[in-house]
Length: 126
Length: 462
Image 1 (cartoon, chains in turn red, brown):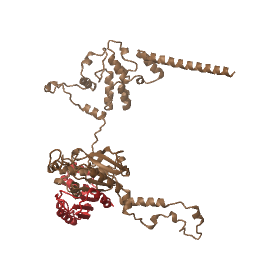
Image 2: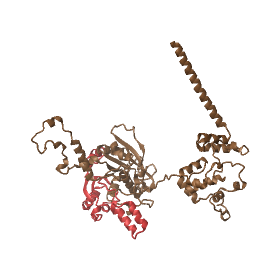
Image 3: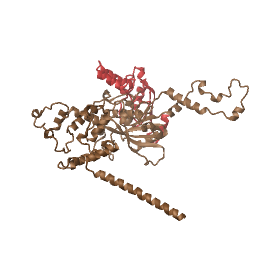
Image 4: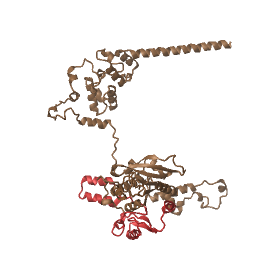
């Protein structure tokens, strides 16, 4: 694994294209929250096309994170990123992205309140 | 008869008591007399007699106070009170001083109330300078016997002389406003570096979670006995400023944090975990053979199949498969909970954190405050918050880049300080969008740098 200190030392020695190498290593190697699971509850203000999909797919198999993603939407939500159209778009993008190990996009007609969330949450982590 | 014996014994006891008290009294008087004895010669004689180094007779503080209190008109011998090490006390030659260790040299300097910092050569020069009447402490009143030419010399000149160098006066080359100002010298810098311990440790960019500390806990304030620890943790966030987070975890999950963190060295090797579980099971299964079992042994059991079965390892049957549930029970996972615009200190978010921490043990739920103490709080359906900002204005006050860095910094804290094996992202509303962005490794302006242009925190190690 490439350590951050190594990258700094590369910069210090001023190798050719060190700047590019630095950013390349930074982005594609270890710099990532790298979650095993992501649960987005009524997500807002994101662009699914920019985040997931065929275009964003990494070609390097070594850097695929294999994350499981779950997104839950409300039926009547009007906020950008949380409408049913956004849910459909996100589902399409997740389907095309090979970084995603598993996914589930659910549009619920029931508006979950916090107490309902509490009953569901434990089942997600098992 | 008995009474006489008793009387005698009481008398003897009384005599002994009187004798011992009189001895103590004499000793005390002798000590007091010695204490008030102004002669330094007497003091030195006593020192030779009982063979105690001279510095043990007086403290430096005492020496200074006596020197300042007594004027130079008084007797010189009296001025130097018993125990004071005057300049002439240094009966070491330069060669002898060079043979002394650093500790011994510093001890000699301390006795003379001088600085103890610096290299060995500097310490020797300081001591030698002391012998020649050179003092660094200007508050000390020098005796009148000292040469006038030396007293008129400035501190810098004395120092230059002690090093055998000539001091050049550059005051005429200075501007009017620069005259009289103190200037730094390389020696001063060296002194500072050796005197003061460097408390500002340089923080490695790999350990963003290093500064994480508990600033508040809810110990004793929770009405529910659920074995959970609720704390507010302060950690290094974007722009090298402090960010806070609401952290809930079972006490078992906090072992690593309480032990000072893991520094990201948590071993998550599955094969190691499987092996450990297997070994624990085998150890637990090795029950000693009971007496009745031995008595009932089958004599025809030539291969020892039945007698040795209790000692057999499970490994004989090949690799023992461990279920995912058993594995997950061995490691602490982290849940990075990104709250909605109400912030992590909202009651609903707090309850959600506690629910996850309780139901999914062992986990550490870490909810960073992405709004830095300024969550969205609408004032009675006016569409404005208390500052008169609408929602968009309020959102603009929380730049995406800062939020992104804070999320990564929080992940680093979970990895490095809490030693979690993996991180699950959980986002609600505003936090949901940020969770998706973090999962997709999307960064605002396509940069990982912080808002101040410095290197941002890593997202965690893969």
